[in-house]
Length: 256
Image (cartoon, rainbow, N blue to C red; front, side, top):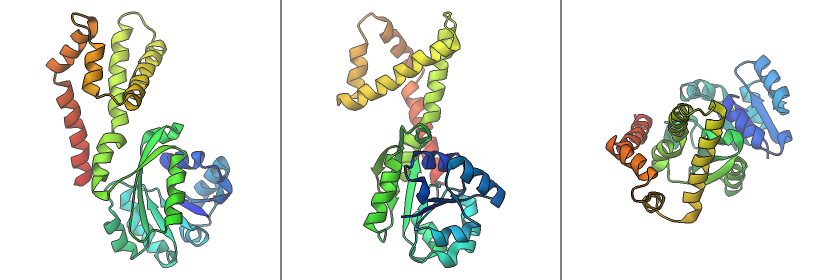
């Protein structure tokens, strides 16, 4: 099965890096020179242009900004019969895309930043007319980059708040801890390594333990100990409410 990528930005390159069969990948970038350069870099096949990519591919991954879809669909529309489109764009629903391309099978996939190191999470939803073999192929493609979850399209904005935007929140959280540790004499790199391991380990512990997060928090907090003082400070500064508001802000923005 041949898969073509229209748009070769950071996310598309991360996906391609995680795919084992580079000989099945065709790409088309903004210019032909850019296509040739990135095809050589990624060890994949360059297409002469967008519509030739569609002709030569079974699955077309639209990895461009949402505002670019209309112009590209005008170019490739006549060649989409028998193809499946995979969109990794936020905000554009399956219905919105099909209004532009007709009854073409559509898969929406929302990978987060961590697919770049094969530790991401990708949400997938699809139109009813997607072939089961194609759906399996696309899910396996994203499984190579971490893990996947099948969701209803109505949950996509929630997923963006939960997983798409949350890496930025985690980065800010870690950076704040590192900055404070440096006040105690730690070098930046050492503090970053310690904090990153602590956060990733805690996240994995929560995931595999099956124990509620609040209960685990209580287990770490000994009466009169150090951790409880920090947790009280978080509570006094409305930490949980701040996080909820940040997640809600991203969800609301995606729904606009």
